Image (tube, rainbow, N blue to C red):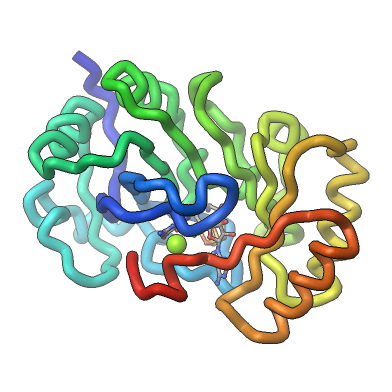
Length: 225
Ligand SMILES: C[S@@+](CC[C@H](N)C(=O)[O-])C[C@H]1O[C@@H](n2cnc3c(N)ncnc32)[C@H](O)[C@@H]1O
Ligand SMILES: Nc1nc2[nH]cc(C(=O)O)c2c(=O)[nH]1
Ligand code: SF4
Ligand SMILES: [Mg+2]
């Protein structure tokens, strides 16, 4: 029995739309809570953990819109829900919010023992606690509110770095970060912020210039979750 609990904002099956796993059928587990406060964040409804907004697992599954409501579920409950929902995907993406505010090891262990591959999406501002086999996507947030710094251990653990960009400053920030943390072999993706045309053009040009890869949030272009 694994009774570690996680605060979950959303739980759904879709196609991974970002990074190396783009196109992979995936079950998404979106955790509640993030203090990093990126101004352009597309999941601001996950920032606060408001005790009065706790809901049951049934209500979580019935959610049809993005809300700040969350549900407190154990690893065993999560595994049961995956079976009940008849989800077919074999890959699980744990995102947020900032999932690394909590220890993800019990959740990833439980999922991997049940036959799933696991991936986490993180800002790299908290220690990454997960299994060795988990695929870690670090999307560094430089100089965010509260003075969050990217942990050197997160940059080392990253299987891929996915940097949101809209301005030349973001490109310069990324170059400094890669130099500072001596990143040479980890695949680097640029992700245009909010599908903006200028951001996309900048990302394309910078990918070609630096031999980085482009991640365009495919799900937003095709109108899926
Ligand atoms: C919502 S975050 C949650 C996980 C974690 N807090 C993080 O920032 O990596 C998931 C991914 O979406 C990216 N993202 C958030 N808002 C975005 C936006 N408006 N445009 C492009 N990417 C965005 C983040 O950089 C991150 O790679
Ligand atoms: N389809 C889809 N792919 C994604 N990849 C990362 C996402 C995220 O919000 O972390 C995300 C998301 O919200 N939807
Ligand atoms: S770290 Fe992630 S979830 Fe938190 S504000 Fe930034 S993009 Fe949003
Ligand atoms: Mg998203």
